[in-house]
Image (tube, rainbow, N blue to C red):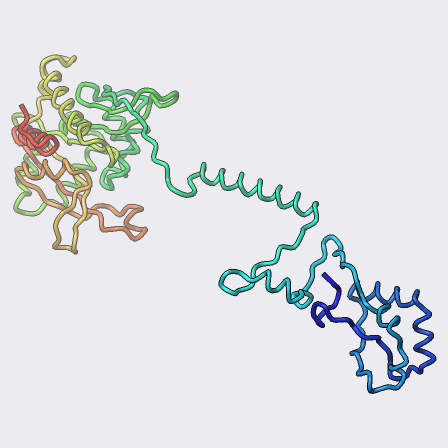
Length: 387
């Protein structure tokens, strides 16, 4: 590439002379080649602007310039770009501009050579970005990775180590929450009738509680404040048409005792585990009637004739909407109940945070109704009549 700037390729730049110079100055210029070489170097570096060339007829001194002077003023060679410098688009020659056009006539992007230290820094930065992207993918960035965890559920008798797990599940029911600690203690002491669903295979998970079910005798524990609290909630909110029946059930004067049926679990518990939980509770009651320690009176106290379930629920579509139970098995129990009613549950943190209004559905069912509910539960889960 010749250093012709904007004049184009193949054109010779004429002798550059100022208007004020005389013919003696022109001859002096031809003799000072050293000065011209300095000017050429400055021109190459882009630091000096030459005045526009003048026509030969404008000055008589121009005609005295010889062909040798013209030859001396021809700028030949190549401009070497300093490392790290760039050239503006105006310094491109017409030939390079033609070569830089793409197939659609547009201008291609120019490749500017970069210093070596910049390349090293860029490569290091790119490696850091790649590591950062990999760490994001491990932390869950991008497409979520679904891991399958195999859990072996085990059904256990009541034990002191399950206290906090049982209490946590009771806290999910706004009616049980104020008395969760006392109720947990009573359930643990009631070893004969009660089942806990835990899991094995965890290093420190022996006390995990995924589900629990128990029945507490209304008469035997009548002196306990937590049982008195539940009894008062049922009677205070009972409608007049069921008031007499409810008092009879909770009086302790029936042929067979009544019991508060407490149960709770994690929401995503497999349905088959829920069914087995209730089946184990039935087996516990049948076993306790025949084998419980403490004599005949204790065994009779475990032969329940009625069950009272205080199920958490909400209403869809306002105050007159359909009841939506938190646990689907409570809906099965309600369909086999002797009678039922609802009342506003004590305010919980969920309701205060703007959630739905929490209700409590009191479900009263006999022993026969409970066994029928177990059959319906099996049909619902397995789609066939239980044996």
